[in-house]
Image (cartoon, rainbow, N blue to C red; front, side):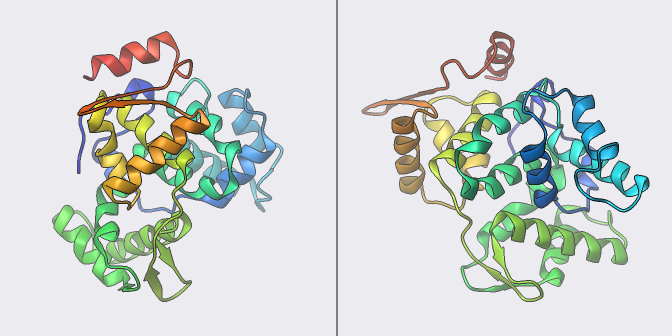
Amino acid sequence: MMLTPFPESLGFRMGANSAHTSRTMMSAELALVLNQVDASASAEGYRSAIIEDNILGKPTRTTRERSAKRLTELYALDCDCTLFRQLRHFWPADSSSQPMLAFLLAAARDTLLRDATPFVVAVKLDEIVTAQAIGEHLTHLYPKRFRPTTLHSTAQNLASSWTQAGYLRGKVKKIRVKPNVTPVVASYAILLGYLCGLRGKLLLDSPWTRLLDRSSAEILDLTHEASRQGWLRYKGVGAVVEIGFPGLLKPQEERAAYEQN
């Protein structure tokens, strides 16, 4: 399910450092930030709102700084970052889409979350997902990388992120469920593939659309509806498929995405 290259100039992240990430995706904190900070704010504006204005209600400056650092690692919080700016484009459309929108951006910037999620997608609906099973999968993905205590906490935090995104349900006992995927979510997933250089039919069956936990037919239906709603442009004639995002990307972003092809 890996896709390369991930264009770092557009906001994707990859590499050994991010593969060690073991904290949760902090979707509730992200929602607070996006709801209280103007979409046109600078990166420093976001940082100031979290640390100086304490919009997250953290008890100490240390915890505020820690939250700002983690949210920036996961979501950039910078409108000069293509992935974050596009998240803000889709974010107001539908509150039910927001958990998966946040997850997709987090997965684009967190190697471990991106690599581990196919595990939970492959679990059958209504089955229990344990931290032990997640830890065993991580050991398979990253042999000898985690100490036992770190492995357990990382597995717990992945389970928390998947619960926030909607793949799991339950506080203690985690049950596999389907995440809520809307045309808005599908559009963002397709855009991630587009920015990685995919075109045509490949956009409908990419690592990003596979994370949506939907069949090929369902992805196509969501794409048709997204096109009808104006989130993207879809044209299909026989085996030829054209998908684009007219007016959404800056010329330099279009060039960077094209160079990945």
